[in-house]
Image (cartoon, rainbow over all chains, first blue to last red):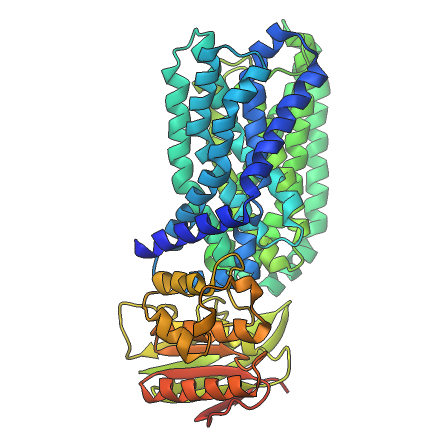
Length: 222
Length: 185
Length: 197
């Protein structure tokens, strides 16, 4: 446990000292949310209806942005080799890294989403629903994303291919996240149903993501 | 010579060189027979008319698209667990074939849907999950090409294939789990 | 404790780099692996560390802690230094001691002469200082097997001398060393392995 806490603290320290990761994600989120109304037009009623979807897509793309450095940095400076020599299971190390990654890139997106919801003319219930679904769903995006990040270690130009590989796997999270947010506003499905499925997706990705990523990192170290 | 002897790559290559021309002929022949039966022997549906014949291409393409992913998943196990070189070869060859049949399935289904449902596309669970499988096929093929060392590419692709295999039961049961426009299987 | 390898094969890019390789090194001994670039020295070290899968042959550790794998009893000093520029010297070393298990950060830094730079961000270190920090990592984390890949690279003469001293101490204290190198290490090689023809 001490080893995992050390990994978590180290990653948090690096992320907060180098900075930029959270800001970059938030700025990209902002860019997506601002560009879409320019393209769609200022019809406020329309924006209110599709607002949760726009916020979710922005959060999804912003999450993918920061992923490719997750393991690549450790691979390049030789830290990954030493991490593989440790006595903690690699899967748990990956969970520790993913957790620190979510806290520094995913959570800022969740916290910024109410402000962006105002740009899209969302009512308070909708903003609350979107925030909650993002809070539950962005960890799933991170845990699924670590699979792509681990595979990207093996690729030369990994950054380009990573979103292509990860996006199809995140589609269920997107579908249920938006469905839950819409259910809170419009019904007829009760809010709890898609929210529960979203939570289930997060829990499943917590297991599947690190296991697949650990396998990919072990293959990639050779 | 036992069947297992063909797991030896050079024996397998020798076998393929002898057998491949016959397999090509057999494939073309069975395609020909199938298409002939589709267009000249199968009757028109009393409701759908001649458009039902698209089903004779659409359904097998769907099967083959999913079957190829299943085959690649088994091959991926062979790569990751046993490091067998033929497993890499099998997976790498199956990917474009599966992608092509999935594409054919989507296109023929879309052409069938226009007269029958009134639309080329609808975002229901079955169509969406098959489209996602097609995107994953393309991603997999891109992954194969972007790693220089073929052995490493094979291992990376193997992991992605196994993760993507979770889509197969979703496609199969999508028409049962959700209200979809697509017919139940 | 004895580390024994037999019938090892290394294939890179489809071409065999070495095959039928064997070695044996016991507690208190140093195995020096020499050879030109591309001969497979790093690959051999990575095989022992468990980072590279064995295509053929086996590597056994006889004696030693039976509940730990060979990798978990080895320490690897590779070409790169595994240092994060954003963290200070102390924080870098502390992370590895907490993760790989041991302690003695301050003493290790003093032993390599970096005691005065403890609070400096690692990004400001010179190449030689970074290498010395990696050696400090070897000291702080007590593992019996040292796998060293070109350990004297980037070290100046006094640095190399200090490293030789530390290697002698490690061997005297019951450790073993497998080192890949181009040039002299400053210690007597009990066993030698020449790769590449």
